[in-house]
Image (cartoon, rainbow over all chains, first blue to last red; front, side, top):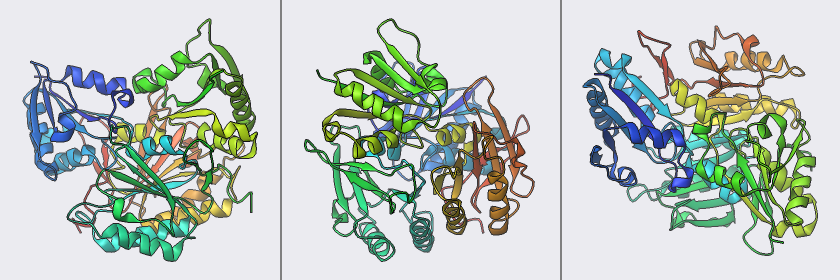
Length: 253
Length: 253
């Protein structure tokens, strides 16, 4: 009865971005738990029991995983990207905090992964080459006023801004509100990238600027990057420009 | 003469955190360029020429890499962690921007990696489970006033704060100034983690709070995490507490 709970980030999509420790954790596990699009990415195996669930039942999923580990199972809970960044790690430890005190002494191991902002940045050049912030635009679990306060502070700090969960069918308008707000605080020439499904067959990247950006292309699979005052385009004749946030601040001014 | 330039993040240390695409890029390369502690992590190979350099000559290193790729070589430039986050990606595109116009059309590919904040968070639990920012504390390339402005804005935004390059032999006092500043803007009970050399044999993690934190333990290999108002400890009887920044903001208040 030596159960273990691995919290695994599968990366944005391709196996080439899955760290070996994650592969090893999946190979050792006899139970796989997660949102179905993520569990579907783990190959079938006769000795791996699969528990796939819908979105937005993270705490139920976390409790189930903890119960199985408590019963001696080797459990892998999977997220896309990195499990620590808007993934299952927080849900697991919230369940630990509120649940059976014995869960606190389970063998729980978080395996790091490639988060969407990191993967999108790699495709784009070096947009995260200087200070940045990472925010979820969803108000499902926080008040919209907190989102607004953070966007304004991020603009004042002149951080590059990476937005996760920018829109969904139930929240189609917030990304428009966010852009309206940012346009009042930042220069219209600020580079913007919409990076959708990075690393997957339907990957689509759109480069624009804050004044011209049309958020209607944004969906749940899109990572939105908004530059700092230093972020710029490095043009290429043969393709879309690179994005660069230089290491040096203010030198060119 | 089909040169290529791979910009590769080696992750924080262990091979188990090196994504397969990075391994593949290194295997294809015939030239390896980087700061010596990073190139030392790539195994010797008779057909891999090594160019190791000191710290803080990133632009020279970038130009050298671009020249070799232009000459038809397959070049890997390596960083620790993720190359896009305070790594070589920004230096390469800065060199492209200022250099030979032909460099703009080279085949340049950034390979994503596991950044130090992601790895530290995995060890700590789920400290990055909600909105956060990533900052370099170094004023080598930006004015200290910008650092201060960003720290204050990050505190006002109530972001979890991940500090890279928190101290060096030449900059031993800035982390003390940063903590003094944060103590005037944040609650003393805010969880703090000093995560040193994560994933390496000399890994050392210290958990404390903002009031008690003693930055004298901090060095260049340390990633400093300072919680938001929501970040808390989840105690364990058998070890140091987990850190949790829950997905829900303000629910427990």
